[in-house]
Image (cartoon, rainbow over all chains, first blue to last red; front, side, top):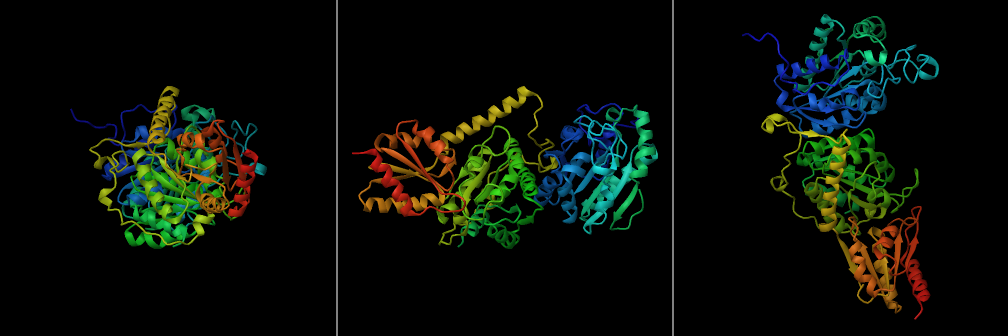
Length: 250
Length: 351
């Protein structure tokens, strides 16, 4: 019998704990496939975040270190400096990266730290139960913005890619989405390119992946994907924001 | 050599090749030395964006199997507490240097010993201990820095060299032991070096245990380790305690001044001695029992409002009076001040 599709050997057999309809699982798959296709899994070290993906170290079939909330880029820096020949990546959510970890991500990019960051943006704090994030959309209601996020006093969403794209030593910064099959294929290309950049010692690379959170958005999985398309993407436009090799949009 | 440079040189001599830090007075000579010297020996110096980032870089590098150092001073060490707790929880060996300055808050930049509680009683959240070593001269700073790396590796536990602004800024001749060959450093079969290096077995560095029974067992295992440290790694020095009526208890810079005070006391016919803890954790509780049999009183001298004195009271256990003399705010007590305290204490004891 011919195998036409199988789970990536970049993932373990541990069942994922993510909510139904959440796209973390898809993003894990794309990352794992990329590491396997680039033949670097055996020399890859993951830095897991605090947030929904806190158990990422159980799922990726490689060595891993669990970081404190927001500190993954600093932990990755320590690992990469000791093992520059290894592939080191962080997998972080928007509360982790865009709130408590803003200093760490900005300065990892500023140093041109030769690591890859997979930044999963679902516009909300998932694990803690749906609180407002820096990426929460204006008007979006959460458990800590029950009447909807208001611009005055709570501000407007932080656009991480646009911010990091101004940094000279950032080699590759792109925003993708996994809400449709074509977009998912583009996301895979971007993730693979980011790792390729690291393998070629080009410097800091980050792929922001827009992700759905049906549980905390209060939507069905299908409606959540539609919400990504209709509500998130207009605020978080997809595309390549920086590519020192002049690549095209994924 | 300046104290801070001696500590840095000792670290490199002990095989440390990675330093992550952030500038803060009065320890800047350590990162400056490391930024200059580490690249010459194939090492890496990274100036982090904050102490918070620096300690997490240490976490990553330690988890990757390196001998790694960071240094800071009191306010910076406060910022590192989150990471220190994670490092202790994940059982990662590394060395931290705290060149203490006076607090609280921004405080001042002059010497202090007011971080004793923070260093020995936790500092960060959760049940854990650092190994804490307190040098009182520069040669000892060299030796204890190297010992800190060895103990950290031996127990997979963070170790702190607790110095103060005086030790850091002082100049004294030191003898550096020969460079430790990399081949002699202990192997780390738990470090994240990639599954291709470990026969396919995944290695995870982590302090997360969501099931209470697992977390309790993890903490109990940590405390079995601490019990071994308390049994095997206690270090202290006794000076003239055999016939002393008053025994001064002091560490670091204060112990150095106490030595001078003791000589002055003896010249005045006052029999004073010194009990100097070298390891603050593990604290030399057991060393007090024999001393308490012959001495009539203890005088704890610290550059703080009294922190180690609590441990001394536990150790003396009410057998003898325990008096305290402290200066704070960056003021270093003088030998004549200490002599006066010994005199007053001795007079209070009567014949």
